[in-house]
Length: 578
Ligand SMILES: Cc1ncc(C[n+]2csc(CCOP(=O)(O)OP(=O)(O)O)c2C)c(N)n1
Ligand SMILES: [Mg+2]
Image (cartoon, rainbow, N blue to C red; front, side, top):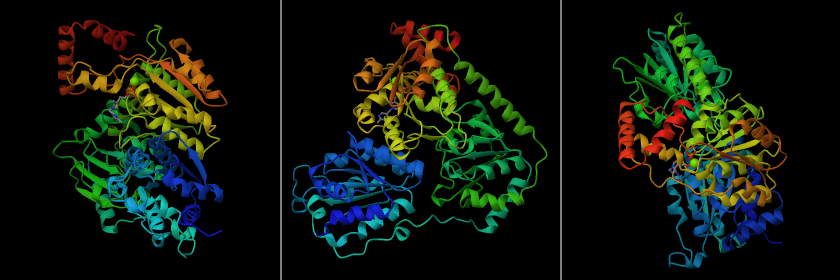
């Protein structure tokens, strides 16, 4: 049989090590899906919404570090990929999006389903090109793969259905070694490392702020902290890489962090940022005498959140390997002891909030999160929805170097968590994959709950059912608004799960939480836990900043004037004495 462009496409993907493609078929994709079917090397993972396909591919890429692929048919089919691809691109995971296009003869004439993927996906990709003839293949696809893997992010290849069906050009099958070469390790100039050593060896209390750039550098970061007697604060994306086996850990700062991380960072003389682009400027130290140094492999990230005294462009691990021997052991543990003591207290307070309540009406979401943490497998993969589930994941999931944590931590999109479990479980069929879903996030892409059954994925979905867009409701209150547009009328999700062929467990009483979560995690197959939790829990103390205290006071006055004083009573009961 003669080789088509689609055959060549499938052959190139296989050479790049692609194992599966998440997507939904469509006539413009028929050439490719048929080539995949005949080739038999790449699994077609049939989801129900293309956004889920992109999130799933992103999760696979996050866990494996290797190229993952999603596909959509022309027009709306590939347009649905866009939000998930934005997430992948901003999380810097290597993903290829295949955007099938309308017939090439119709392009530019306002045809049925016509869009311009090469324009639409430009902002969420390193590389985004249209293949308009067989003679561009497989070169365009090869470039797309190298860009996605080499620069860590998204590439999109748009290709009309009729081009996929054309006779392939006479080009050799690309070699794996040239398609996906290994990553180079970036070394800074020696003079920069020397300057950094001088800064750190000087007087002053040092705090480290660590982000995802610390992946693979756990031991180096801990060794550096030991010499400097420096507390380690982490950004959320640093959590899975740095939190564990770490006596210097003092938690997170920022809106979803807590006081010990906040103070360790604000109250220091030298802040050393390691592989982090932590975005919230108000949480950086402001004191006149504070010096900031930053190590990052991306020069464009140096100094973009806070003015830095010393920028070092390099890989964190490789740089620390050279730096550590130059660092003198600091004798004074005062700063470190204060910060770790503060952390222990903050931790105790958080754990108290997660304890069983006596009132049936008030399962605290924290209790659910802690139970998940306590009973999850040693190498579980967690995903968490944007909204309050992200807060609970940050505070109650303990990492250990084997567990992984995926969210939408840069793009901040709702509905990521269950979608990401599909990619995680497809790539790791034997691992325990747990989604911490919001009821808003879960229902936003709920169609793909059915995919768990269809694809045979034993995912554990825990829905934090607070009948609200809770995070926004709290934001509204703490900035002086009456909560508005945040309520849900939810079904019994456990019953819905059972009707879909998934085991459903509904939790309504605090006393049942332990057993319920244990049973869910032990179940051999997909499970949905419908955890009916309090809507009134405030994750951020209302007085953390003067501005928020003012906002919250304003909200309270408005609520009384609005005849909603009972909401205030509920808030007080939940947060003060329940
Ligand atoms: C796609 C999208 N739409 C809207 C938002 C704004 N937003 C952020 S969190 C949130 C509420 C999430 O609600 P839910 O999933 O129920 O979680 P909860 O905070 O209630 O636990 C909203 C509306 C967003 N981040 N992404
Ligand atoms: Mg909710």
